[in-house]
Length: 347
View 1 (cartoon, rainbow, N blue to C red):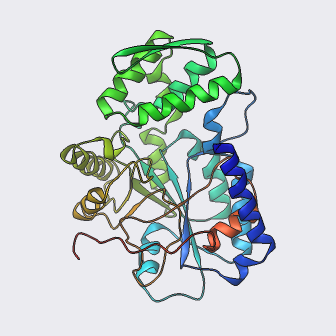
View 2 (tube, helix red, strand yellow):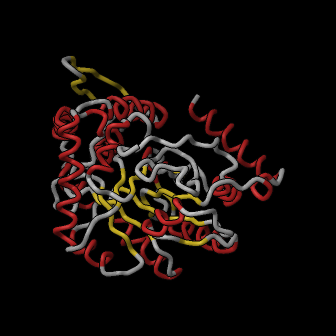
View 3 (cartoon, one colour):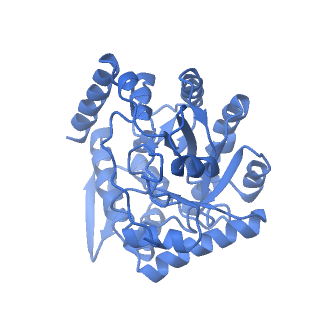
């Protein structure tokens, strides 16, 4: 069913391109694009996390296309300014990367440097410290290697036999959804138990997948790069009590500011979908002093303050969509309904 929905959405966007809607009905001041992993294609059939990846070649093609379409490339400081002013004749695009993956500096940064475009990296500070848990990668590794899997789900042990890629993908989707629903401590206990059962070194996997402080210092020294915060441990804030969520937000910012010796003005809600944070977290972001906070709720940024700067929409771009026509439709804003302003803490 999910694959059918994606096919229908792709068809709708392709039809929008061929009917000329992107050119006739552009809406909003601009768009923020969200990327997660940028890496070359790998062999192997079972790769559920490929959906969160694009190739360096496609990143290059996308930037070239956005330049042809005469978009202004902005950092997040300039996005905030453009979002509260009168509509500009030009439209903007901002490139953002979540999770501080090692792929950013290894594969994305050479492309971005060659094009001399600004971009933002949102850092969950436990990962460059070497103590973050890339639990989705650990889960992928377990299911890829094993055909018989048992794990504790709640107070009951569940057993699964998964021999084909379709069965493995279904199990990954089931367990990923369950883990996402857990409070952070329970999630950590569950994924560490699962990885230990099947001799997967989650700590080593997590460190290998993440940038370290040396990598981030290199990026921070580039005037085209903005370093933002994404909490400490990258938890779904909606699964936490408000006091704990606030500590994650403020401590993540404090660690980043101490590491880079500069103000950290921009924030990304971990996961960022409607189930992962609440309005109270939008208020927390404002009270914490962040100039902006981005979600993964799809949409474009409106001018004249019509989009709440602490609940900015983003267009997630991943391995499921490799069409420049679709990108053109999405950044035009035609694919999205107007978003009502979200009340801020001060109004």
